[in-house]
Image (cartoon, rainbow, N blue to C red):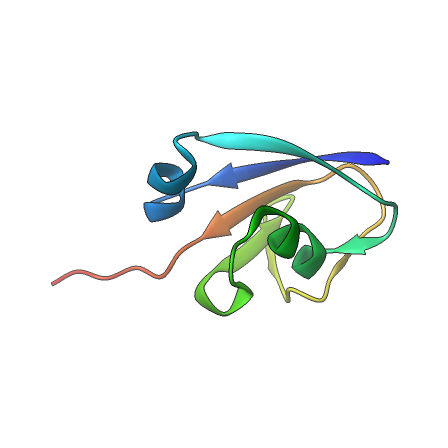
Length: 75
């Protein structure tokens, strides 16, 4: 198992009442696998792995920092 740090922003921070969480996942899981594990719909967030925005199908072969970026709105 590999430990990944998930950083939460905006409404996700409120939903989980945390700025970050650590999740234990099998080797070579994808960002989608992490999102499914924590119950976040991949169609409503962008993910950045180690500082780079990536598709949710990206594999995570080593411990990673995954920032979940919700859509931005404003006016």
